[in-house]
Each structure stands twice: as structure tokens, then as C-alpha cells.
Amino acid sequence: MRSQISDEITFRKLEILLAYMEGGNLNAAARLLDISAVSVHRALHSLEESMSCQLFSLQGRNLIPNEAAQVLAEVSREVIKLMADGIAATRSAAGYSADRLKLGSLYSLTTGTIPEVIIGIKLRKPELQTELVLGSNADLLHKLKQNAIDAALIALPEADPDVESIPLFEDEIYFAAPSGSPYAGAREIDLRDCAAEKFVGLSEGFITYHGFQEAFRIAGFTPTVVTRVSDIFSLMNLVGAGIGYTLLPGRVRHVFGDKVELIPLKQEYLMRQTIGLSFLRVRERDPNLLALAAVCRMLKHK
Image 1 (spheres, rainbow, N blue to C red):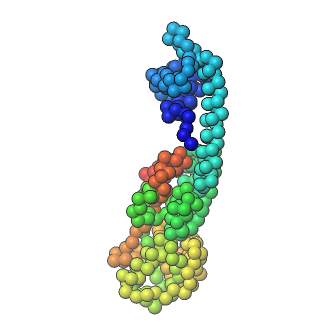
Image 2: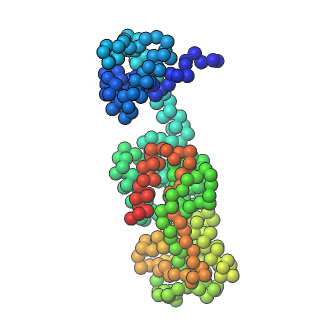
Image 3: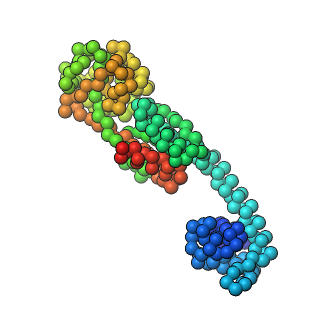
């Protein structure tokens, strides 16, 4: 069905009309909308032409709204409110919410980075409720692309035209051994010397899992993995209990106090993870994500 509404009648012009009605003059309306008085005058003149009827009379240099302008302003308030409610409902149906942020995170970031991020967000946007979703790198990246979460603090994914990423810090991978083990206190570890040992590991999908696999590929043997778990803290518990050795990122160094020791690997096994914030490019102007990105950039420069 063909629209009978002129293309020149826009929501922005209706907002300018309402600002003018509230402010009473061009300068006041301009201050309310942070635009120039010339822009306000031009929009009102265009709106009047598009309506094909007079909305204002000129008294000196002032535009005086007539009854037609009052009617249009009243309708405009209803239309703009209805559209704003419709946009909010649409975003909610798509998984977006103005007052809630679903933030994905690796388990290993909950001991330091995540608390700082949540505090930073609360300071910037006190009304915003943050919901934390924990998982593996692969799981969180999938959730991000499915709009199940708004953003994720993960190891940076491979280049993807749909995903924007902000690097925060690099983390090195270490050999993890229980305190008091034969390897405790070593200056560095050559994995080839550990071929007879038992290991524990993370499930596939975790970024540390891939580092684990790559390290032993370089060492030239397949380690004996007695069990795999789906979070890094369970993994550290197993190491601390003497069930097996593993490889861990340096960011968890202080989680288990003196129970687990992280020892540098020889240079040939040296691996680093780049941790950062990832979100969909189509949402890069989302106010909540802009605030989150600003918080993360501040942490980056600490």
C-alpha cells in the first residue's frame, strides 16, 4: 500500500518540533537538542511545507505556533513514544536490552579482570545490570554470533568481518605442577623430560586446550591425559591434588596460593594468549558496548 505521508516528515523533525514547543524559541530548542538555531528553523520550515498547511505565524523574529502546530505536537509525542517502545520491544525480542548487559567470560578471568570490568561498568552506568556467562572460548564465540550474549572477554578469535575485537593483554603459558613435586622450583621445563608423566587437561574448545596440544606437538609425543574437565579451577584442583600435571596461563598464578606452582617452559614451547573484548560489528554504536569498551581500554592502559 502506498504511503500518504511525505518522505520529508521524519521522526527527527517531529522531535525538533517538540523541542521548539517546549523551549518557546529557536535558541532554547537548539540547546535542548545540541544543534544550531539555524538547523531548528530549517527543520520547522521543512515540516510546515511537508504538512501543506501553516503551523506558525511570524511575530517579529519569533515563530508563534498555531492550533495546527499544537495538534501535530500532541500526535508527535504519541508517535515518538510508540516508536521508542516499539524499538525497545524489538531489541528485547532480538536479545538486546537497554538496562542489561550479558557479558561472556573465560573462567580464568573471574579472579581479576572481570571484577574490575564490572566495577568500571557500574561506575559509568549505575542503572546497567551485568549478567555474567562463563564458558570456553569456542562456546562464548558461538553465543556471541547467535546474539545470546552482548560481548565476550576471550582469547582474540581469528579475523572475522562480523566481529570487532579490542586486545587487552597478553598472557604466557606455563607448566603447572603441585608444590613439592620433583619439578617444583625448576628454572624451566623441557616437556620432552615429562614423557612418562600423567597429565590432566581442559576439554576441547578452551583456548588453553589448543596451547596444550601445540606444546606437545612440538615436544614430539602424545601425553598421557588421565582426565579432562570443563573449567580451569577444577583443573587446578586436580593438579594441586597430584592427579597430574598440566599447562596453564599465568593469570591464574595466585588462585591456589602455594598449592600449584607455575614454571616457565623452555623457549621452544613459548606460547602466548592475547585476551581481549569481542562484540559484533553491527552493534559497535550500542551505548552499553561503548561504555564496556571504554572500561576495557582503561584496564588495558593500567
